[in-house]
Every structure is written in structure tokens, then in C-alpha cells.
Length: 48
Image (tube, rainbow, N blue to C red; front, top):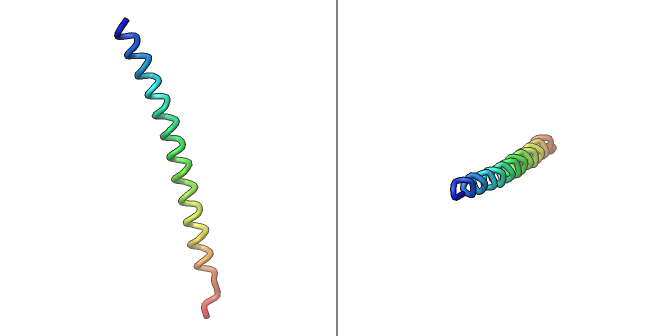
């Protein structure tokens, strides 16, 4: 009984970990896109 509860808990934690991971990856790529956009905006500004 105790082992099956532990396995269920482990699976639940694993699922939460997957969700957090994917959210983290999405957030990271979003940040990279924003940084790239800002970089190119700076790059394309006319030099005065």
C-alpha cells in the first residue's frame, strides 16, 4: 500500500515538474525573442 502511494506521488511530482519545465522553456524562448528584437532595433537605428 505504502509503495503504491509513493509511486502515485512520484508520478504526480514528475508531471508537475514537466509542466514547470515546459513553462520555463517557453518563458526562456520568449525572453530570447524579446532580446533579439531589441538588439535588432538598436542595430537598425540611424547613427547620428
